[in-house]
Each structure stands twice: as structure tokens, then as C-alpha cells.
Length: 345
Figure 1: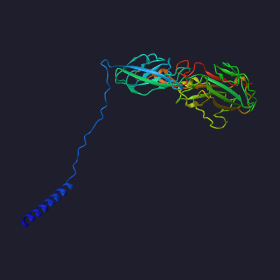
Figure 2 (figure 1 turned 60 degrees about the vertical axis):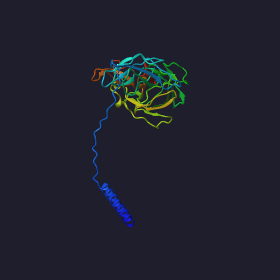
Figure 3 (figure 1 turned 30 degrees about the vertical axis):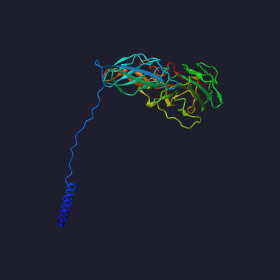
Figure 4 (figure 1 turned 180 degrees about the vertical axis):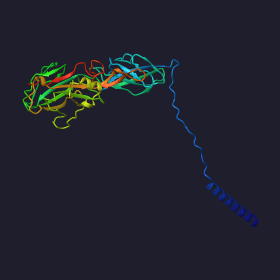
């Protein structure tokens, strides 16, 4: 009996020793090096019909309206760096546009050009044409001409303006070509003009100017007769005085505004009046005549199809500017110039 107990004890001791040896060897074995396999990201290939053509559709939705409203009439392009640009089919008020052929597998970006006095330009998200159909929705705004009221801060009275659609100077008056103040400024030597201009678009839920692009007030005033004006946005003159940006204009804009001396970025104009303060002194010892009346022109940048510049594929480029690069320097945002002549005597 005692021998059996001794045998059991020896067996347990041997088992413990073996387990200890195994644990020791396992804990001290060399670390295995697991080879790293180079992995490459494989982009999923677009699913293309046998024809290799994807039908492209687009909608233009007005983002200022309280209910879903679509606009039409503008030109929209499927712009591509790798393939030729494709002009979208006729845009609908109620449904998707007429389909056009896109090269399946190619990258495109839908771009709506500015439609003067109608709709803003829009740059949509880049997409890969895939499958039988590709539908793109653009969000833009309705754009309109300006309404204006001008207050003479010296006399604290509103000023009549000709060539507008409203003769009541206490109301906002829609600007037309070469609108002119009829209440002339009697300017003498070492005198000044001090006015408040209240601007808004001439319809509710519309804008003048485009988000992300420049809206300018440009001034034509003889530097021999007038000092540089002080232009500010807000109720108080001297607060937020703007910097002249004429030297930063696009080439087509500089050409069209060759007779102007200054341009100020005043921001997009909406359906709520924005106050622009305009203060300008005469040059020392000068006495302006009617021929020296300052001209104020409001212009807004948009997107248009160039008449001159093409890309490496021969497609006409889509450019940004307040004036097109054609021979007529056509306005981009409006049909009629939004100009006020501050008549002096």
C-alpha cells in the first residue's frame, strides 16, 4: 500500500516538472515573424451597360423657396477632366432634364451657368457615370436686379432717381440703365457727398450676386476732381470701411471697367435691404461740374462659357467673372447695367 502511495507521489512530481518545463519553453520561444503581405486597394469598377453609355439627367432646385421648386432655362454642363464636356439636355420645371450620353466610367461635375436676371450658377459634386442612368440635382438661387433708395445724409432726405420703375423716392426703386439722381448735389470747392444707399433684390426670395463669388460696387470718378471714396457696409460710416479691390478683378472685368477707378466687395444682396455708406470729398481746390458726376455701378460675378479660352481637350472653359470675355463684355448676372449717376452741379 505504501509503495503505491510512493509511486503516485513520484508520478505527480514528474508531471509537475514536465508542465513547468513546457511552460518555460513556451514562454521563451523566439517570437514568430509574420510576413506582411502588400495589399493594394482595388477600386470597384463601375457597372456599365454594353453600349458604354450612361444617360445623364439633371435638375435645378431653387434653394430659397419654402416649397420644392425647380427652375429651367439655364445651360448646364457635365464638365470632365478626362473626357469631353457634355451639355445637359433641356432642363425641366417638373421632371428631370432630357437625357444626354455620358461615357460610362468617366468622372464628371455638373455646372450650371449663370442665367442673367434668372438663376445663379452652381457647381455640383463630382461623380462617376455608372449604370444605365445617372441623375444629378443642383441647388441654386433665383437672381434678380436691384432696388435702391438713396438718402442724402446732409439734408436727411431721400433722393429722386430717374430711369427707374418707381418715381416715389421713399420706396425702393428698381435700377435700370444709367439711373440718375434728379436731386442734384450742389457741390462747391472743398465739398463732399455723404449718402446712404439701401439695396435689395427686386423680388422676395431672390438675390443679386452669388454665394462664394464677388458682388462689387465700382466707382467712376475723376481722380483729378475727387478723392477716393470711403465705402462701408452697415449703419455707421467709418465702421467696416472697405478696401479697393480693382487690382484683383478678373481680366475680363478689368477690361470692361477700364473707365472706373475703384471696386469694393459689398457681398451678396438679398431681399432685405443692405446699407451701403458712401462718402467722397472733392480734391483740394477743385469745383466739380456735371461732367464730373460720380458713377456707381453694381456688378456681380457668375459663371459663363468662355468665348476664347479652351482646355487641353478643346472644350471651352467655364470661367468666373462679372463680365464675359466676349467682344461686347456682356454682363453675366444682369441684362441691364445696375448703375446710378450722382448728378452734381
